[in-house]
Image (cartoon, rainbow, N blue to C red):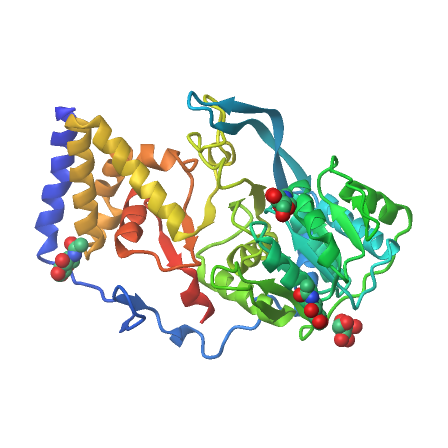
Length: 452
Ligand SMILES: *[C@@H]1O[C@H](CO)[C@@H](O)[C@H](O)[C@H]1NC(C)=O
Ligand SMILES: *[C@@H]1O[C@H](CO)[C@@H](O)[C@H](O)[C@H]1NC(C)=O
Ligand SMILES: *[C@@H]1O[C@H](CO)[C@@H](O)[C@H](O)[C@H]1NC(C)=O
Ligand SMILES: *[C@@H]1O[C@H](CO)[C@@H](O)[C@H](O)[C@H]1NC(C)=O
């Protein structure tokens, strides 16, 4: 250990010597965005707002189709295999569901496109009319993405509803948009059945899980996702592609302040958001692997999952409760989503990043002794380095601290993260610094600033 510290001193001395000659580089201009003072890069690089980053593409449906044709044999969507599901009961009688999940199983771009076309045809065969709206009411998963793309190809507007929404809010959203078809998981289906008496417009429900509670209700027909696909496969129909000004999604808010409000977004609106993110994430390309676990009912996740295919990347699905090896729902001794997938890009909300920060701090404190001293030294060195010195930021010293200290922190998220997108709420400056330093990120961006 002492050898390490002596080794660390050499680059520190180097940095100190160089410090006197360095020029402080100021980026951006100060802006008042409320809360912590921040810097932003004004859009001098972009003389007018970006509408699309892809020539000749004006809708999300076109963007997806082009991607599928370009990368047909590459994997696109991955979902982990369920090996074991069990309920653990603690001593005080509380029970927790624990899962043991296996490797990712992949769908190629080509196969995904085929499935999307099948599902779209099946939806129409089932009786859904193109001017009627579909609601997707489920947690983020592969079927959510497929259902979304299917609707886009039919010029059917999708109403997105948080899986956590309560009965009253759910009723309000479905009624206000006169939804006729609801696509949901088994868990959400139970909620729907409970309020079936108040849903005047819903006539069919498609359940993403193969096994579902087919509770008798004469008000609607319930089909499985797989059935809709096979019906469509048997009698394919042509697509009915939307225009840029057609409404792609009506996104309902999470309802934390009263009844949720629906936000209408056209294909052009969402495409511009996707293009803006594309412009800002450095070097996004076909080597990138994205861990998808945030709610697709939120624009941050929806934009990200429409962007990744467009650059030829890979989307692996996870959940907030199975993200890391120590997540609540992961059976002890088995692996979390990030460890198995090793993503390069992730989106997060501040609450999750705060939890990562507190988790790392707690672990370091618990270790104590030399390990804690080394961590604190590394942290303060990196902190002063990113506060001006580019030598310290990119040089030998960074390499050393990464190797000695931060590599272990990085391993929590699979060890390959190079870019994090944060959104949904303001991120504290402390957490942003901590994550930037520990994960050695090129960048961590606040999403709201991008869509302004
Ligand atoms: C898409 O659907 C909307 C609403 O039903 C309709 O107004 C619009 O004309 C459709 N677009 C095309 C290109 O058919
Ligand atoms: C559903 O919407 C209609 C108007 O579109 C309204 O008259 C009715 O009260 C609403 N029902 C519920 C349960 O919100
Ligand atoms: C259905 O409604 C009953 C009574 O209102 C409630 O106790 C139950 O939790 C509800 N079930 C679900 C799945 O929401
Ligand atoms: C960064 O440097 C400035 C002055 O150059 C100093 O006021 C500030 O406290 C430093 N911040 C940190 C976190 O070290």
